Structure formats: structure tokens, C-alpha cells
Length: 158
Image 1: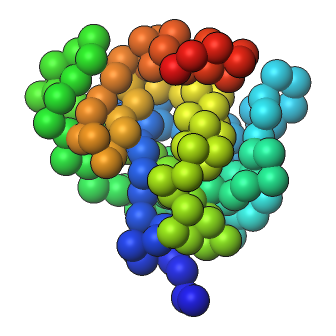
Image 2: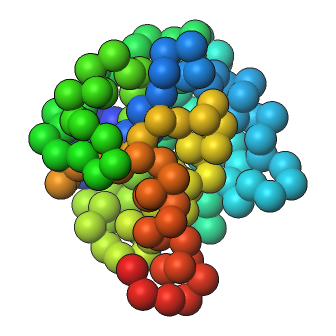
């Protein structure tokens, strides 16, 4: 199977939304892969390509829209938690998609859990204004997203 960022099996599942001046680039992500970070950069073609592959718990995710590369179209957001969905029109987007080895697995709970944890970590860089879950067309203010998912990561309910 030839999976890619544009194929259905590897289509973006989430977006991190940033004020354009705070949109991180490849160097920003690479600089934050030590210490408390739970991810690493597993592949980066070049800074001007605008994307990177991140590794978290053995799973890879592609992040497209990094500063210095091609901008990504804003996702279609219909609802918001903690902010008005109309407020995202001026934001820049980093799109998170499962890597090719996860093609078709984007709805499996372990993949969703790791993606949510990765989103919470990457959102600290910049920092992100909101996180959007694309299948639900829902954006959540970053602090509220983290508050909702952190207990899940610690073994509690989601």
C-alpha cells in the first residue's frame, strides 16, 4: 500500500492551531525533544519542506505546516470548547497525521491515545492556541484539552 499524507489512511486526524508568529519550525521541535518531551524527531527532509516525522512510543506521526515550509489550509471547524470556532480563521495550522505504517489504524484507541499525548506535548512549543480533532470538526482551547486528556494518560477515565 502506498500511504502518504494525502491518502485516506494517512489523512490528518488533528491540528494544532497557532498565532502565525508563534508557529514552530523544525528547529523548535528538535530543540524540545529532550527533558520532559516524550517524542523525538525520527525523520526530517529539510527545514523548508515544512514537515517532520515524530516518534512517540514506537508510533510515527507526520506533522505538516511547520514554519519555513508551505502553509497548510485551515481545517473545517464547526464547534469549539473554550473559544469561538470563528476565532480560528486567523490562526496557522500544524496538521498531525498517522505515519504510513499506521495507515487505516487512525481510529484504534492506542493510536488515538498516543496522538493525544503527542498533541499535548507539541502544543507546549509556541505555545498553541487550540487543538482541533478533525473527525469531530471540534477545536478545544489547549489548556482545556490538556486538562481533559492528562487524567487518561495517568490511568484515569477520559
